[in-house]
Amino acid sequence: MKNNIKQYRAKFNLTQEDLASKVGVRRETIVFLEQGKYNPSLELAYKIAKALKSNIDELFIFN
Amino acid sequence: MSQKDEKKQFKVMLGLFASLLIGLVVFVTVMFIYKAGEMNVYSIMSVAIALLILIFALYVVIKRKKEIDKGIPQHDERSKKIMNLAASRAFYISLYWFLAIMWFDILFEKMQLETNSVVGLGIAGMAIIWVICQFWYNKFGDKHL
Image 1 (cartoon, rainbow over the protein chains, first blue to last red):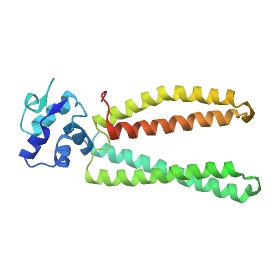
Image 2 (image 1 turned 180 degrees about the vertical axis):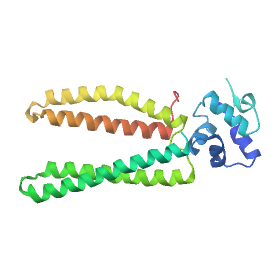
Image 3 (image 1 turned 90 degrees about the vertical axis):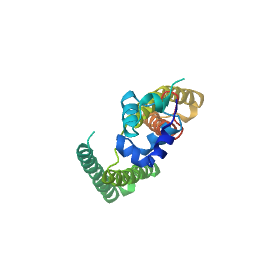
Image 4 (image 1 turned 30 degrees about the horizontal axis):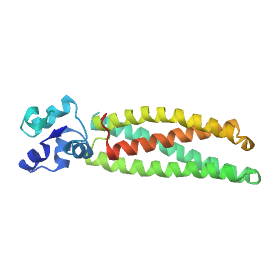
């Protein structure tokens, strides 16, 4: 699934490690998410959206 | 899992690991003292393999300790999914592995593998397949993740 996590992360000047610790996952999970190689659970998607002051619709592009 | 729980789990793991290491060292020492004459290549090899596994475990324990100190969670939803996927795929592949061992035994009748060797080969193969699956899904991901 495509997403805009990288762009939003850059907007808030957050590293992958910062975002990972904010949402309580390992850095590798953020790496795979940004590459579109991992589909997060609804809970994680919500947490990421909250951490990036956005919403799920803006962050994740559903095909 | 909270950080406190992870630290507790780590302490249990460390205790288990230390007991295993001490047990292995005592076992090897006793074997060398009393059974030195009866030892063969296979018994030395099995101890060497156990030692290698323990050294690998030590590496994992040290790595985990560093991560826990930094506050990095040991497992998250992705790592749990990978573990489940790797386990189910490893089980499926190992069925073929057991069939292969069976065919190998039939094809090369002269080898006459003992039951212990067949079971050992099967278990070792399953473990290796599981480790490879874990590594593969961790590195390359999967559409089911």
